[in-house]
Length: 380
Image (cartoon, rainbow, N blue to C red; front, side, top):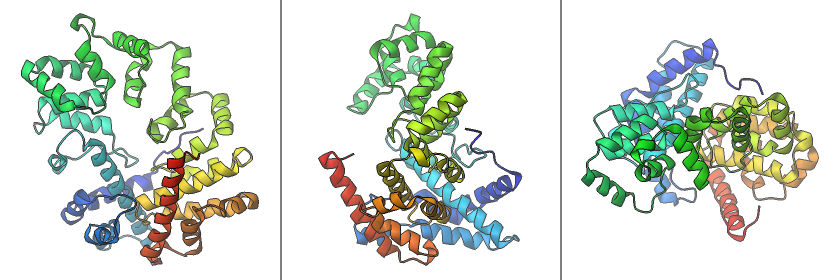
């Protein structure tokens, strides 16, 4: 697979404007307080919260005062939508470790693709004076800042260390955190940490892998990259990291993974900012896509659209194109399942902006309830 996303000059111009609008006081205040509640949320709760649509309306009021074409305005609006969604996901990733309200005056590190570089942003958080040593140590361990974590731990008092361990309770420990607490101080280097992980067969996350990959032989590095790229879990690794590992493999291995695990790759391509690559890759794997996996892809579309509160018009257009290009046999199969109820509403509307959100949300909730039931009884 070639480079999946190289921003054009036009995109970079839109991105710069989108960030300026996002950090406008009126827009940012709403965006910071925004959250997406659970899927099966009660209707009254839905009516009292800040909605994504409301934030976009305020943002578009700001955009409309700028001198630019309507096409350019819509591109900026789409980027703001994804900025808000990305910002919310970033806050969610930190809510178990720190007081989210302390993030209000801290700007995360935005990449050119308008994703938040969470590791670089964690360094920004550690370098501020807003958080105590235990929070900084947790962040350093979470993102595998090896030297920072060692220094922070050594500078903590015995009382702080004891309090830290008791506060952690039953939460999941980070591998680097466990190793620092349990290892001998004289043997604290990356190679020793890598050996510790291997000896204890500890599952690796993307930050651990990024740290220890250089300690591996070329053959071992390829094995690690393959493990990540072929992992079918939606949660073990972030989609962008899985795609990055896939791209580091040789062409032959990439093609083999596309043939044997098209669902795995296509799901990753339904995340921001890779959606624009989805149709081109999907077009190469029709012969390898089973009817059930076709349905799983449709489900991923619907879950993702709902996570944007049905405001992601570009993703909806990609879904329509994907459905139009799909073989009739796969369409007939999909019509038998619950996913087709919200799907047909999206497919039949000219624009999600004109759609009655309650009708679509009701259809989605029935579909989501069916997926919960399937998971409960163990269906694939």
